[in-house]
Amino acid sequence: ARRLERAGCVIRRVRAERDGLSLGDMLRTLGAAGMTNVLVEGGSRLLGAFFDQRLADELHIYVAPLLIGGQDALGPLHGIGAARIRDALRLKHAKWARLGDGWLVQVRLAPTVQSPARSRSRKSGN
View (cartoon, rainbow, N blue to C red):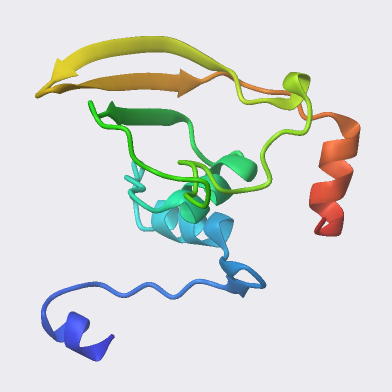
């Protein structure tokens, strides 16, 4: 961290949780510093955590003209997810644009109402 600070980076400390950083605490810290937009470019666990905690409001997805993976490959969102269709995240205002050989898809997340069971499981840490 000291090397990064000497290079001009600003280090912000955030609370840790059982599964890693407290994403909510991180966003509050960034907001208090005047930051209103955050680009999250991560792996499937980080992206899954943002969606499970309902912390994302927009997606920019690049669809490449490739098929990769295998039976042990992680999907793009590795998190708790939705057990029922009615609890799934809803997308709206999709825009598609050609980008190189692939496609860029931009969507916003529609507001959701959590089911009482899902809200209780979040509060209890399950």
